[in-house]
Amino acid sequence: MLVVTNVIVFFLLTSQGMTEDGMFLLDHGAMYVPKIREDGEYFRLFTCMFLHFGFEHLMNNMITLAVIGWNLELEIGKFRFLLIYILSGLGGNLLSAFYDIWTAEYAVSAGASGAIFGVIGALLYIVMRNKGRIRDISGKGILFMIVISLYYGITSGGVDNMAHIGGLVTGFVLSVLLYRKADRKGRTYSRR
Picture 1 (cartoon, rainbow, N blue to C red):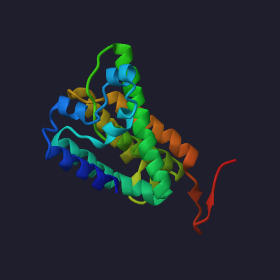
Picture 2: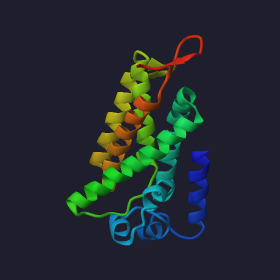
Picture 3: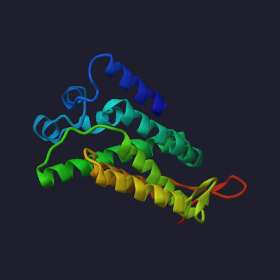
């Protein structure tokens, strides 16, 4: 559902203009801290999660979401998955906004990667709770993916690393709060 929504939004916007253009995305809901602070456009913290700078940006995010997301959804269900995804995206965007304010360097920001990093953070916690593995996913594999993804973001230009880190931490914390491990008979239990 999330992949389809992102793709539909992308192609609707592509039919109206250039999605690689920051001003075009700003006009359609991308995050920009001065617009949030001065104009009270808080909706941008949410809408920017469904906008992407071009087809390559969209495909990178949607392939990652499809591959990683279904694993998390199988473990926690649709509602908790959606909750983690949306709140992680918001958490990532808030950290990004605070960082922009702190550095006084404002950039137009868009993309689902903060939310996707939240999904990865949630999976990391679930793998840890399951002795380092769920199905084909290992803790070492997730950690390797996190390190490589963050390294790529840090060494590349135009990447909102604070949104990635904020999403990752938010997803991990939400998973701690929302995940209930199932025993072998399918019953769930939680720590007390």
